[in-house]
Image (cartoon, rainbow, N blue to C red; front, side):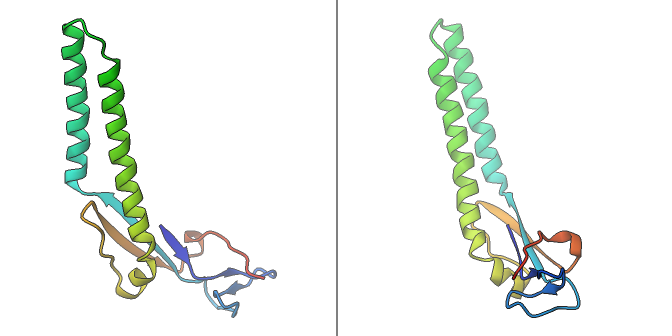
Length: 128
């Protein structure tokens, strides 16, 4: 997640979010998230458990579709849940990260904050 506090005006001049001209590119703040080790462990256990149960069902001559679908859906739910919680939490903290230089991520992951004024680190957002 990130935010750039400004952009360019119609003449290509750097401006801040209030439209005032700047002599350098506007400040950009980026928050990079990584899952906690326990999240990766849960995903690995789900995958290994699904493979094991599919093999057992196959060896017993039973259908494997239910185990495959169930394990896949559990993995998707965990992944989407972790990403959603982390994104919602971090989006609320980008401005705090700017002031503190760090964030307070939820227990599901870690985050690092980078600030920059480099012209190539932001997405152009013209401000009239």
